[in-house]
Image 1 (cartoon, rainbow, N blue to C red):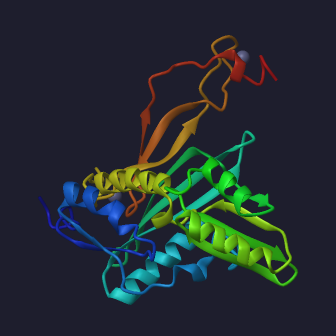
Image 2: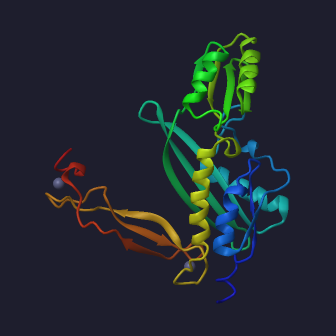
Length: 280
Ligand SMILES: [Zn+2]
Ligand SMILES: [Zn+2]
């Protein structure tokens, strides 16, 4: 194998996290690449925004993840970094869509690769609670205590959040303390990776995909990192034959030379229920 093709084998890769994400990436990167995933001793990723809103998230997930990865390389002097960024949005009543982005950055090549996934989770958002009993009942619905809880007030003076509430005593104490401030108290899941086992599973699955991708060589320039960079749409309707938004192919690409190749999906047509002409 050429030197370029082998560049991530046995490498040390820094995961720019203060929330233990290196633990989710360690096994996949070891298995695929015999690589070591470490975290910086002290990295302030909260400066890029927090879930609870005490520090506003102003960047896109992609730019926040890239900034974290660059900070990880700067703090450690290592050329390769991982960073991830989650976004939660309400969908279908009590459920939510969790989008997770995992980014790999190679500072020497100035190459950035991303893997994304969207999963459905329970219990998005916060519930306003009147007391500790209420808080406990609300928290159980999103998987507490396995998923830790956040209690917060959000008034004209800003957000005050108590995070990482991992047991009933901690939850009760935080709710009692915040209620004494006289503002409504809200309870929600803690989305930070070390406090959220469901998110850990998602980060692990993306780490598996990224580690595998770093073993795949670009057919044109032989740089590792060949993987899906987009899709082609226009699958014909099975009644009228007009193109729809249905996906015809996954597009594989290189993060270095920019070459791409479509990989067709098996279906030749899509049901007319997705056709704007037949079913506007
Ligand atoms: Zn049609
Ligand atoms: Zn290439």
